[in-house]
Image (tube, rainbow, N blue to C red; front, side, top):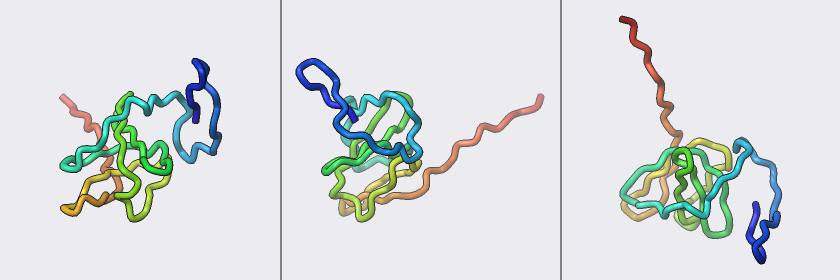
Length: 103
């Protein structure tokens, strides 16, 4: 994890990736989750207040940590929706399979 400090990027925390592919994730561009929608993708990171999820290439969503009974693990691909009470409901994300057609 890096943070900008006086115009320079500094490493503030280094952890095992736990299934997250190496790369640069601009999670600062993340949008707050709309609790009326469902989001599927890889869980990238969780801090004291927020869970970050990648839902597409360069697309990130933030979920409030307090909405989870049990946090999903970083690197897991999960589907997150919300109950009527506003609590996060975590399930396995459905795999999208491409079907080939023979002509």
